[in-house]
Image 1 (cartoon, one colour):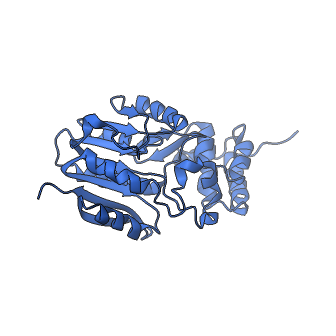
Image 2 (cartoon, one colour; image 1 turned 60 degrees about the vertical axis):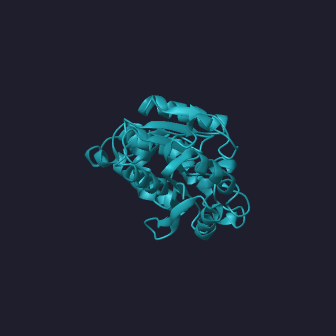
Image 3 (cartoon, helix red, strand yellow; image 1 turned 60 degrees about the horizontal axis):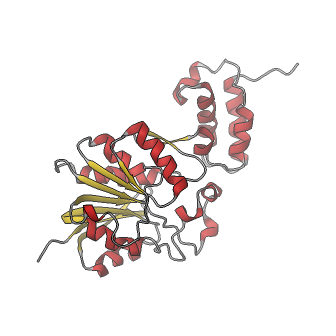
Length: 286
C-alpha cells in the first residue's frame, strides 16, 4: 500500500520539482498550492505539517511545473487587500500594477467623491483597488474583450458592486461621452509589451491572452491612441497614470509631451528600479 506523504514532505519535494522546472519561487508556489487545497493560509501550513498531503496536490504541482501560472491553478490573484478571481481568458495582474493603484489612491486623497476611470481593466484590478478604498468614488471600468469582461463582472460583484463596467475599446474615439471633462483620475494597465524581443518573456506570460499582453512592435500601439481619450475624459487638473514596459519610458513621456495637453509628466520606478508607469495632469485653459 502506498504511504502518502505529510504536508511538510510533499511541499519540500514539490519545491524541488518546481525549482528544476525553472519556477522563480518554487517553495512559495508549492506552499500556496498546498494551502489552496487545504483551505488555509500559507503561514498556517507549519501547524499542519504532519497532516497527510491533500488529494490532488501532485497534479497541481505538475501543472505548475509545466509553467502554467499559479493564479490559474488556485483561481485567484492577490492584489493588495483583494483576491481577484482569474483564469483563462484574462490577464493576470502583476505586483507592478499594485504600485500604480497605490499612486492613484494617494493622488485623489484630497478629492471628495472623485470620478475614476480604469481603461483596459482586465480582471478589474485598478478599478476595484480604488473602489474598495474610496467608497465615495464613482468608478467606471472599461474592457474590450468579452472573456476578460466576464472575470471583471465576477470581481465587481464580489468586491464593489457599484463599479460600472463598459465593454468598449479604450482606443476608440468618443467613448464615455457622459464623462468628458469630468474625471478626476484615469488609470490604465494596457497591453504594452513590445512584440520586438518578446522571446524573452517568461513562459507564464504565454498563458495570458496575447492581445492583453503585447502592444505592437514597439509596445505603444494601445497607449498612443488611448491618450486622446485620457485627455478628453479628464477635468482640468485631473490626473492619469499609465503602466508601460520598462523599455518604453522615453516613448511614453514623449507621447504625453507631444500631445500638448498634459503637464507634470513623471515616470515612476518599480521596486527593482525599472521604469514602470508614467503619470501626468491635464492642462487647464491658459
